[in-house]
Length: 429
Image (cartoon, rainbow, N blue to C red; front, side, top):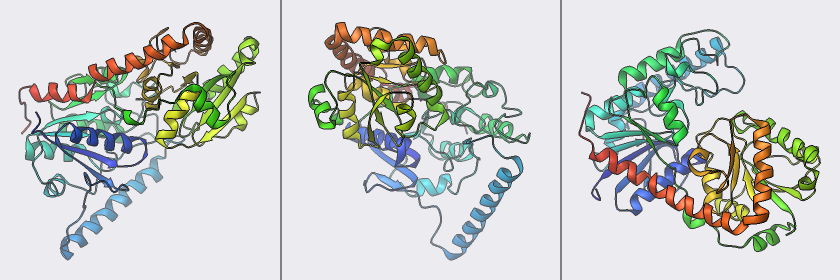
């Protein structure tokens, strides 16, 4: 196992998904694997991250490549112009400026295992098929969102088209067959032994999907940089940001609450109900806001807000120390990774029962979770959490730390790698 050669492929080495890919690659190197991360767009200076060279130095080849790129761009602009998208939809075309041969030519080795991360606009089903043919490597697609199992959307929300054939995709303003064609292409091209790794809720979605029913889904807890978990006390953390010690502090926020997946409307509705129905708790409560989010929306409903803005990872970990619990209202998420971070820091979580909450949030132990979209249920979870903190604050801190350590071991990427490499080869030719 220690001689294993691993290729990680991701679109970026920055942003949420890019940082997760970078950390996984670093982790695999740290345990002794020969692992490299190849990306379409590189911003870091890490030696084990390669920027994929997309064209040859040969003038004739370069000219042909640039012509092809212009053709692909024109094709995609035509799709967007003719079909249109509903609101801020993120939808992937199955086109790329890379190739399996160009990717492999830049490696120092032939990989035994290829891990696909967030690979939109970089890696396509045809590239995956060709990589399989050329290397015979085991392969897994990490569910940083749900695009691996759909006809192009990153999250299906209430749509179940991915369970059938993605016909008449509701994301387009004009009816077309693009999503159906994309899913058919994945069914045809993706290797039969390709695995999908992600949270328990995503694995359940995999098993219900047309693509995943005949393939293996494996539960995995996305790792965080545990070296950044802060050991500062709540008192020290609050002092640093000028937060009174006698307040119940709820950590809220994300990179951007305008993202409909993050459920901002649920967050505001629940806070209003907390104020109206439980004034005794409201009077003791302040919000600790992180991310590129404005304080006005919370101040307008009468809350005291301490806004920290976008934080470095180390500062974000200290923010968890300053809070009594993290409130997540995500309604469609493969994470959020903030739940992993909060539990690792010893700070309980209140959330809906999606994403990583299914793996880390246990009622009365590490927080509380409500049924997806149940505002009343989530409100009661908040009240229960505030009450429990009055009685068992130290016990909850210990529970969070213990559960994170236990689950990190049970659902580690190392366990997934060991399992997939121990399987008999079933290579699609």
